[in-house]
Length: 506
Image 1 (cartoon, rainbow, N blue to C red):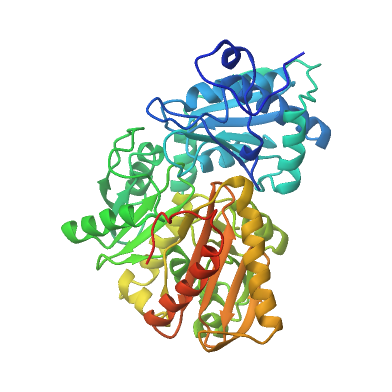
Image 2: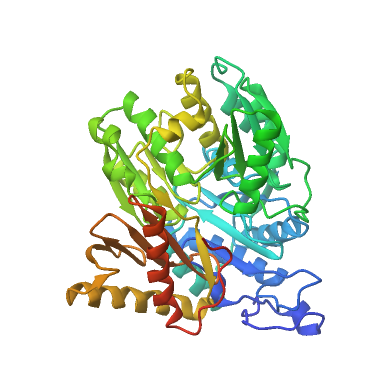
């Protein structure tokens, strides 16, 4: 019998080497994410290698319970410890009877592509995505292109924590050679760009560094690499195109090289951030509106799924309205939006984080930063008389914040998010105003998005993958109104002493 995991162990002890460590909070809404630890950190680890093996046994057991063929793709991102974690995961998967297809070091979308290319039903990709070094995790799915949601994660959590494994079957292992070349060939089997668009390709020294520049060059882009040397210490900044530090570096490179656009990729390559030719950072939800305009001109009457952190322009933009676009605002999170895009047969889904999900003819329904980058380049190619800045400036003006995150422990963040939601629900029911404006709407599908009668709005929701509460604000009126909305939302959070400092603010 494999030992039952426990939630707390001290490193450098016999118990740490002989007992699986799995902290329950690592099972998040739609993937798994734990603090694995780094030597310089005093923060105790939430997972050890035996715990990872238990996770693999749990995934294989769950696949059997779901009636899914026990074949699964795995890969790992570029971090100092990810390969070891993947091998421990493979041990557990094989022990539970899985035939494991290992594609080696990879971006997450390469693993999703492998489900199609290798005709394998399931995926378990070892990645901490954009999280800081010391974090690890697994993105999982059993029905391409959809990944696990709360139901599947909840079942997996119970199997692992109870050690309720089915280990009666023998598994096997296949290493898939040169899979990166197969992935690149699929993306580049199409006409080249009509003109050599000059692109800053920013990878933050993360996994995408090994793959992105070559694909963009093969498509005919004039590529200027930025931080594309693999370095798992992330020496300049975390590879997260939602963080202003990375966006500022991209903006500086655009100005230095006279580029047409900068495209930034996160730690596991499933997201893409954008800086225009004037060096201005464009938040991903606005880029999504630009892409929606471009694609709905080709496919009028289409549906787009949008996360609740995103701009209100998807519902109010006159071009999208003229193209008879249907906008569906849904829960934030790559698994939620991906599933919703599939359910509605939407043309695409857009998240403010930069996760984009394109159905055919653009993509296969999963999030891939390179597919998003290609869609952006195709948009520029179809508009040779306009720059990226021109396309952005064509949008109705709104003032929006970056995604801001206030620290809040995993054990308390959901309760506080609910309390803030109920506070605004009560205010609306009582007819109270916010900064002299009536509350026109409350969107409560994911936290609370409080919308004032002038269209300004503020969002509070619990992060799905970190101990944080997420805040986003926007106003179509003025920057001052945007800042007023932030003060309003921030005041609601400050009523709870458990809420800590923000990672960035306006």
